[in-house]
Length: 286
Image 1 (cartoon, rainbow, N blue to C red):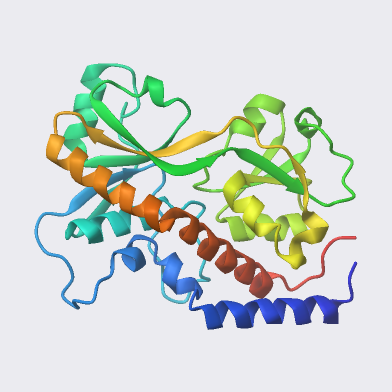
Image 2: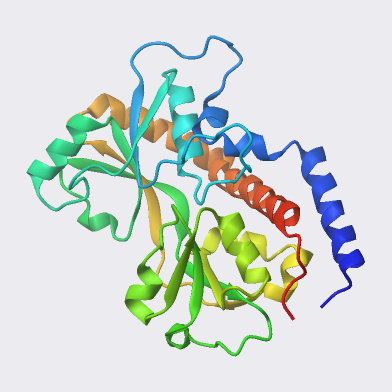
């Protein structure tokens, strides 16, 4: 294990860089609110844009520890509403919203203006939706200590695997490989558990984990199991709403030109790394 003083020095430099970059935690963590803020203090007016998300980030409570969410979905929803000039309202997964029948699609379309979700196969999206893919394709990926004996996904059977609430892969590893999943409230808490030895591996979105293990502080936890087949983050818009489909497509094109999703990931991962630094009051496991 590296001397605590050296680790603290490196993490202090990370904290300084975070603050200087303007990527302080609240900028991303407010999720939809932060992404949807504008120059006008009164904010957007009119009918809210109702967005269905796979997981609704709990509202921050004063005095609680700040935690970055497991995905960038909320931030995308906030920026989408901002660019459309509408206030944002979010709801969780809708009943049968990703079912195969037209009736299910119609029901979901009537309850939300659109849905942001991860799609394994864009070819099987219900016909009542237009699927607009983002330039964001990820897969479940595992990270662990570099001296771990785990070399294959199958070796996770009966091993403790930490995952983050709201992540796209909660339940996958237990169901597919027989791992003992330990669900933590956030990626920060799952990563702290990994560092102190409370779990054998941490499984999360490959895009975010690949960004995280670039940091020198994570070199000791950079052994990985290769990402499984990737899924695509997409916005589902009711087919019958041609105007909405066109406007959302235009915004997604802007995001791609700006590499907006990649920027959200970088900010999120910097924030998460900083939160781990603030939270970890015990040394890494040996």
